[in-house]
Image (cartoon, rainbow, N blue to C red; front, side):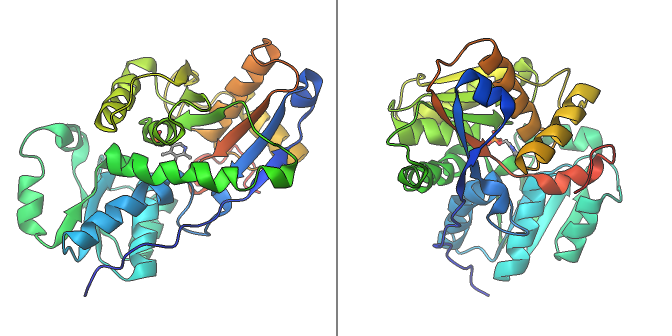
Length: 310
Ligand SMILES: *Cc1c(COP(=O)(O)O)cnc(C)c1O
């Protein structure tokens, strides 16, 4: 079986976001709805994957092998892409066998799973980690965790044109920057590269500051031949990755009710709540216009029963 080239990029709609705290501050926000691009291959993970899949095809691979956790949006997107386009996928999972809704989907999509334990997963950056897996699956192309790296960033750079083409339909001639959640920072780095200084990027960290996001962004920008400027990072992790507090939960329910935009608690809700705090602190002048990238990930909401499942 040959690997399919991925040429068709999905087209996320850009929609105005109407919320009382934005209106009070006179700040306009449009949401680039990556959560709506596909029922299964959701969010920024689709854009992060595209160039990796093309590279796999060029390398003559038959499928891909990659890694993630038991609620991973990345594994979910890879497995769904494999099912859709007809290539085999293997997932290396963090921890011990668990029956999450995500894992059930991975299996239904036909992904072959190997559970590495926690220590085994921590060794994923060690030299030689991939060797036995490459020997075991010589026809599969390894995709880094989360679809990261320079290839992942390049795919995300496509978002710039997809949003720019929709600005005039909103009556916007220009905008004042991008606001989005960061896990590894790959999506942000791809947009910084594509912008080349034209509009600033504001990234909200979903992981605590010591997780090396700045270094990863720097690394991608250096490989892309660009200086380490044009973006700003905020710590929005609220006590840690996957930590959900009642104020965050209430914010998710309120936003969905008021604006009809569903958020998940790990990334998009923390990013939008940080925007609210910055807007209320007067960070953006009246008349400012921002693009908020809804990075998707709603499948992971199933792990948080306290949030209305819509
Ligand atoms: C993976 C993910 C992110 C983080 O993307 P990075 O490119 O790693 O920064 C943000 N939001 C959602 C919903 C995600 O699934």
